[in-house]
Length: 343
Image (cartoon, rainbow, N blue to C red; front, side):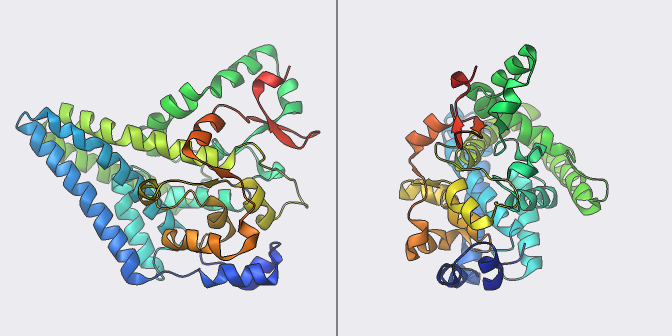
């Protein structure tokens, strides 16, 4: 995904002033991006080495490093995400090579996820483009659609929206199992399909080699303890960035990317440490306005223009609450509502 041009921003509902302001922040700094990749990946690999080396010697306390490895895995995913938007480096090949390498640490096939994520960016919070499996955590159903369901389907839908399932049980299934298949993918997406199974082959080779060195039980234990918290956090971030109190949905032709960014994406205000581990992805409204802005310039763009100041601000505590509510879109009231309020 190439950086958005100023005339494209204007055509999407942005004022001339806002378009110029956003345009200034598109474009990466090579050495900053390279340092982010090298430092993050090196620290993550070092964590894995220390954990496995400690376990081989019987030092179970080395598992205390797994939370740090999980945080670094989240940051690695954000860097892979930036590569998918073509925003981390100016050269496409540099983004693609970096994205492919990161995918071996995030268990997320680069080309496949990149393509589906581009579709998400082209239609988030659009009533007329719902229903993609890859948008499971940003999609919604209307109150009218829910009321037309049979009693059994309503029950199953309610169960499927329980946080214990969506936030705690589904993420490991997605990262360990679902991403091993070219799900929801047209047959003509050849590159994406090849990418999925190519990633699987590389991962299989890595896990076989690790199992030979330290034993498959330790490999499974460490992989789960690192990836599970990272997957849960990543899914939670994606959920509360798109479904929250006050979020707005619109259908064609009213939908435009500017309104969808300022009313359809939240701003997660984190501490400096949390911002680093999440790669400032919480500044999600700016990211949706201009995906060509690299992670380290998002907050500066937010602070540069008044148009960005009225977005929904959430703390991490707010995000925990939001993950349990705002499931259905009420077209009459033009607001998200909780399942418990719908008969």
